[in-house]
Length: 417
Image 1 (cartoon, helix red, strand yellow):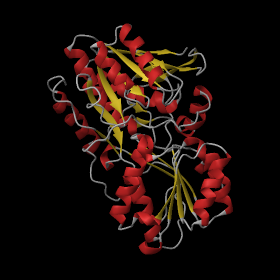
Image 2 (tube, helix red, strand yellow):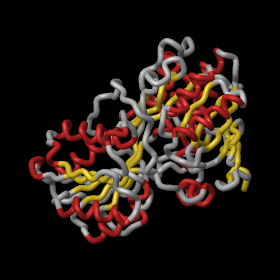
Image 3 (tube, helix red, strand yellow):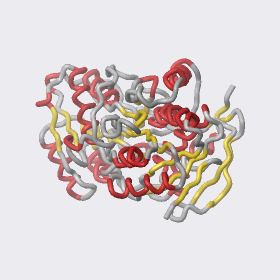
């Protein structure tokens, strides 16, 4: 049976991630690439798993007709990306909970600055009993207002500080997107094997835990079906910049990568791959329409699972966990449609077999034996060796919702310029 790592390692995961990988930048641009996908699974109320801290009380139940909700977004839903996906998730939750959109107070294009305080306060003044903020940099402005308004619940996507405050009404939420990355990696690995090119490429935004966790999971998925694969990672140092993403994607392809993937916001890597005769795996949007001859599949998030859960908690007078993080089994992450015209034979069957592990087994993506190193996020230089023994696993998102895996494992070249 697989064993957990030493408690010290798990308890220090978030501290390590921030120290080894540097301060995590704003995720304001952390929007998925433009596009929509009709394969979004039906959202049902979810129950919290064992990931996270002790739950905090949400107070007495609120009648559905009396519930007022605040949603503070870094952008607006017409981006067809990150904010669009949050809005889709919120609309799913409203429908699931029997609520109307006029019960939702929306603040769009809210920056990670003092304007965030104003936006949140306007939600409070409008009578919101629960307020969601969707950008990493919003958290520092949310926490003081949570302290001042203990009867209102404050929920923050992608952050990590809720467990560190004395507020009982601070909450962090995220998903196990690394599970969908692993599944998408299987499609990439089989395609790489079909074209007899074991070198993968990855367009990363920043060299921080959320990106590192994702590309490591993607690589491990590919390696599970094509053991010879290696992967080169390069960064744009921007969450959303089509020109930079195209430039990095082209550099990876020129370096011999036959299949690339991305943690970046636009379809530029997909179209660049198509123009260069390579293949691509996307993120957070179906990119097949943008690059029908290159895009294999995409890893996606369904935010509606959390929004449904949190709103039900409010109406039922139930506790909202300080940290919430769910994955494939709960429908919080999934794959978009497979591009049947270009995927390698056996791709669907291989992915279904892996999905079965997530559904029926105690399967962990980051399982030993793994060897690698801690790195300096500014230079990419090795700081210290790191390893994970056979039989052990790194419980990503098991102790906190925010990603924390931030080591470079053997087989991956981490290029920071």
